[in-house]
Image 1 (tube, helix red, strand yellow):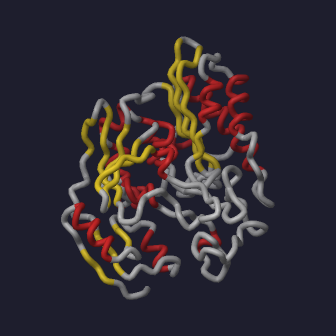
Image 2 (cartoon, helix red, strand yellow):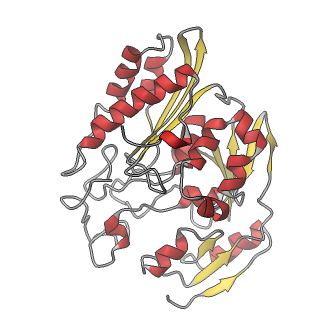
Image 3 (cartoon, helix red, strand yellow):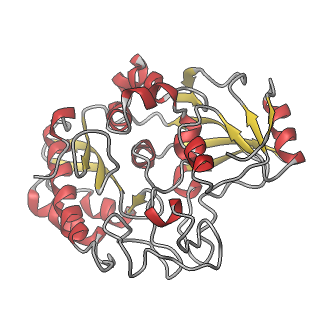
Length: 337
């Protein structure tokens, strides 16, 4: 591992100032992703800014919803009584991700900022525009079974690995950040970026900004929801396709729908047109198939991941059926069937 400086601020302002003094520095909290990146020589920060002393560990009521501090661990968020009762979709998504040990260390902010698990991104002997802009994308035409089918570009076909972020997208969470120019709120839909011609940028954070909290809105979808994660094995693995589905029903009619996918794009993939199609329609398989078709109408397979389109289609229908029935996905049933 390369040598680096280490600083430990005690306030958000000090953390922002420390990052401003060295734009190549990196914040570290749980370190569940960054330490791996440093070991693999993917990232080589000259300074680590340890933010574990910052007062960002609270889960508290905010404007009818909840505010989750950036340093709240994934385990604490998933098992928090308010989250479990009011936002069970989020709790389910977090528990579907990583292992218990990692959830005990990983933070809310760090989860949002984790980087892709693309093989080529981690292998410094191969080209990767995300790791080294302008070097090319080894995944295009290479081994791309786990890669994007939506929103990709000729420069990058990587996917975002977070489960938590997919649920946050469906819930329309808002990311609160602080930086040199003060505080601002970023809707989760605008937080992560598609690769375009600059895949090295994962998010729309401005230089020097730090995540301080994630706000959940008052609308909770606590009854008709599901988080369905399909992966190669039931144990710790990233999603090939995941679906966060949330419905409000008036009898058998869909009043409100939210739908977000993971494992298919550079960011959690939400299609508001499909949600609008569902609104006012009967909650049945025909309606759900139509929504799935709309979500995937622009899906583009790579050389070895065409199966993900049909997998996503079936997952959307299944996820919506489970949400409508009020039978959220069990932890023992997240496997390809």
